[in-house]
Image (cartoon, rainbow, N blue to C red; front, top):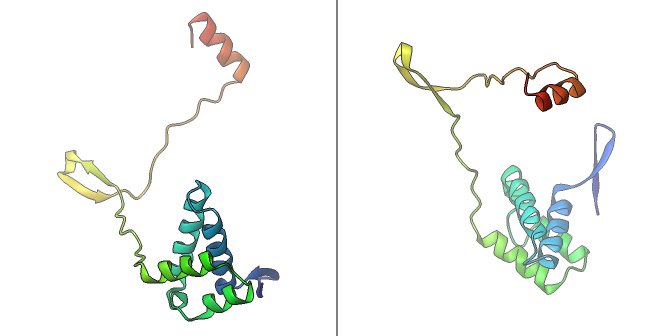
Length: 130
């Protein structure tokens, strides 16, 4: 497939990559891996919305790959289906002391991991003392 050079690394062009994913999706229809193919296609089309048309660069790549009728039909279904990004909002944290209950979380603080030797921790749990 056609490739582009990004930072000295050759990568498949977006239309070629989408076409390859469509072929894989048509081949794996009904299998668990088809879900990741669909997700990859959706993310690529959200990033490159101008490619979501038929005829267009992706359908040209499908023709160049001599893709099956099933893959071409899959591409037509994808083009016809709306794809929208999720409008996920940041999590909210309550600061009840200040009466500010709807503020976005700026930093998620994780508990400190105990810095013990694994064998010592295992021995402590078996004896009942930590």
